[in-house]
Length: 485
Image (cartoon, rainbow, N blue to C red; front, side, top):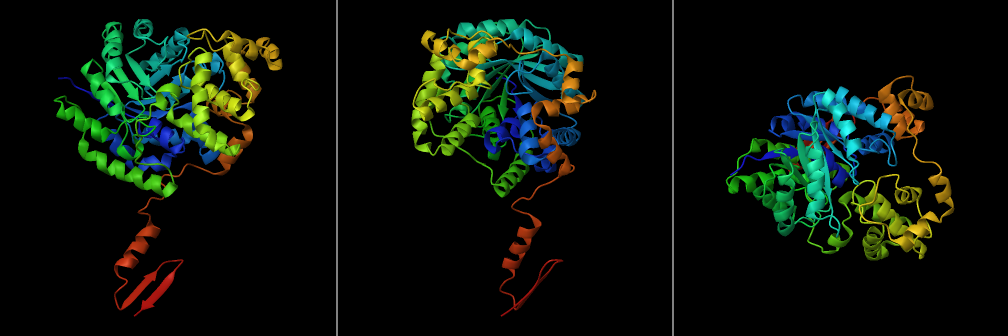
C-alpha cells in the first residue's frame, strides 16, 4: 500500500478545460481558504494563457487577481505552468522574457512550477528551473505523453533520465493531454520512467477525454505513481481531469492513504457548481469512450477551438472530416505532441486544409517556423513532400531569413515602453495596449460573483414559499409588492 498525494487542478486545468480560462478571482475567493485547508500537496493556479484571457475577455488585472488568491491560500504551495520557449506569447518568447515571467510569478507567491517543452528542449527547461530554485520553488520536469510510433517507452525513459539528472528537478510529471493511457501501456511506461527517475517521485495528470483516466490513475499508482492531479467534481471530467471525490474514494478502497479532509469537498463543489451555472459555464461533464480520440489526440480545450473555427465557416458538419485530417497532418508533420503550441498548429492547419479544399494551400507562419526547426528538432522527420510544400510558400523565405530574436531585458522594456516595470512588461507582451487600457478602466477585481443562491434568487425563493399566505409583502430599495388573495 502507498501514501498518495493529491494535486488540485480546480483553479487551473479544470477551469481551463471547462470554462475557457474565464474563472475570475472572485469566482474562487469565497472557497479558496477551504481548498487551502483540504490537504492538497500543491494547488495549480497560474499560466500565461489564463492571464491573456482575463485581460482580453474579462477585463480583469491578472496580477491583482493572483495576489488575492495567493493571500487567501497561504498554507499550500501554489503552482504555475511554463512552456520553456513560449509561455508568455503563443509563438516564441525571448529567453529574457521567460526568465522575467518565472521570476515575477515567484515574487507574487508561486512556489511550484511544472516546466515542459513538447520537443524536449531540456536546456531551456533547465534554465527556468534554476530561476525557480533561486526562490526555493519546487519543480516538476514534465513529459507530455502522446501515442505515436516514435513515442515508445525508450523515448520517455530517455527524457526521464535527462530530467531527473537535473538537481533542480524535484519530481517527474507524466502528462497525458489526450487521456489515452491505458493499463497495457502504463504497465510498461511507468516502470520505464521510474527506473530512470533517480528516486524522484512521479506525478500523473490525465485529461479524461475518453472517460478512462480515473482507471488509468489507479493503474499508474499500482506501478509507482505517487501524486495524481484532480479537481472537484463540477470542474472535473470530460476534457478536464478526474474528480477528487472519486479518486479519494478509490484510493481509500484500495487500502492506500492520503492527507485530504474529505468533508471539505462538498462545500467547494457546491460553490463552483452554482457559480458555473450562473455564469453559463460547463460543469459536471462526462465523455463517452470514443476511439476517434485515439487517432487525433486533440486536447479538450482545442476541440472547442476547432468547433468555433468551423462554425465561422458554416461548416460544423465537416468536423468528422477535420478530425480525420488532424490525424493525417500530425503524422505528416512528424508526430508532434498534441499540446500547446502544436495542438493548435496541427488543428488549425487541418481546418484550413478542409475549408480550402486543397491541402497545404494555406500554411500559417508558425507551421513554417516549426518546419524550419525554430521550435526544436521534430520527433520524427516531416514528410518530404509536405516539407517541400511548406517551405515553397512565399512567406517561407522571409521567415527563414528572420529567426526568432533574443532581446535582453533592457531592450524589451524599451520596445514596450514599460520603464523597468516587469509586471507591466509581461502584460504588454501578452496583449495590445488597448486591451490593457480597457482592463484598467474596469477597476479592481471583484471579490465574489453571482451564484444560483444570489440575494435576488433567494428573494424569489422566499416569495414562493409564502405565496399561499393571505398577505405577502416584499420590500427592497427597488421593489415593493403586495399580493392579496
